[in-house]
Image 1 (tube, rainbow, N blue to C red):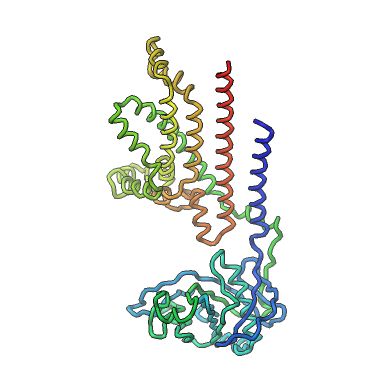
Image 2 (cartoon, rainbow, N blue to C red):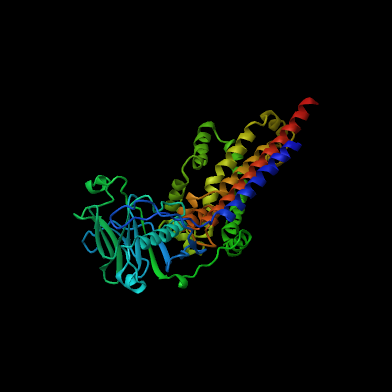
Length: 472
C-alpha cells in the first residue's frame, strides 16, 4: 500500500472524527429570538435583539430585564382533523399540558398567543403593553427555535396576536384554547370562522392571507423570573461524556450479533447455491437464478412484507415455529432472516460470477485424475475464486449491516432485541434525539468506509499479484 493511499485513508477517518466532534460541541447552541407584534397591529419598529437564557433541556427561559419567565415548555407538531363525537371542531391538538397553560399557535404568516386569565392575574401582566408582548415574543421564539429539531419555527417578521379569550377570531380564523371537547380531554383547535377546514389550501380564508398555513403549537407556563430554573448547558467535553454515558448501546450489539449470524448463513449457502446452480440445465438455471437474485432488486419493504406474509403467526409455517417455542416474527431471529434475505443475492452473484470464470477444462482434468466433486470445490474452485468471494462477503456484510425496511416489517422495533442501528437512527430522529441519530449514522458511515477501504485494498493486492503472475 502506497504512502499516498495511507494519507488519503487517514484524512477520511480524521474528517469523520471532526464531523462527530463538531456536531456534539456546537449542535446545542440556544437560539436568539427577535421581534414582537402588538395585538392586531404591527410595531413601528422591531425591538432590539436581546439574549435569552435557555435551559440546557430547552424547557425554560428568562430575560435579564423581565420580571417573568417561561417554564414547562413543550412543542406539539401533529394533531387530528377528524370530527370529535360527531362534531367537526377544526384541526385539533390534544393538549399534553395542564388546561390552564399558555398556548402558541404558529400559522406561519401569523402567530397567536393565548395567555389564560389566571396567569395574567397571578403575574400582573398587561397583554396590551408592548414591553410584555416583546418579552413574551423573545422568550417563546427562543424556546420554539431551541425545540424545533429542524422543523419550522415561529417568525418575528409576522404579526403576533395576544389574547386571554378561550375563543379568539383573527383574519377569519377561529382559535379555540383549552377546550374540553371530550370529558377529561382538553384541546387547542383551529378552523375557519365559518366552520371550514384551514388545512385545505383551496379554502378562501386561507388564500386570503398570503402564506397562511397551520404549522404547530407550543405549550408553556409563566413563572416569576427568579423562580425559573435555568440549568446551564454543559461544556463540550462534559456534553460529550454525558452523551456516551447515557447512550443506549444495545443497537450496536444487536446489529453485530444479527449481521455476524446472518453472514455465516450467507457465506455458506451463497457458495453452495452458486455451485449448485451451475450444475442445472440452462433453462432451469435461468429460473432459479432469477428467484435467488430478485431480493436484490426488490425494495426492502416489499421483501419484509412478503416475509411477513410467509412467516407470520397466522401462517402454517409461522404457527408451527411458535408451537415449538421458536417464534420467527418480531423476534431476534426475524432480524437475522431479514438481513439474510436482502444480503444473500450479493454473495450468491459474486460467487457464481467467480465460478463461471474458471476454465472448465481445468475442472474436467481434475476429474480425470480421480478427484471427487467435493475435493474439486474446496481445493480448486474456492482458491481460484477466492478474491471475488471475499469481495462478495464484505459487500454482503455491509448490506446486512444497513438493512432497515425488511427488518422493521418482520422484526419490529424492540429495544435490546430487534432494534438495529438503522432502526435506531429512524426512531431516535422521530423522537427528537438528533444527537443519537447522528452518532449512529456516523457509526454506519465509518463501518461502511472501513468495508470499502478493505475491499479496495484487497482488490489492489490481488491485482498486483496477478500482474506479477502475468509478467513471469
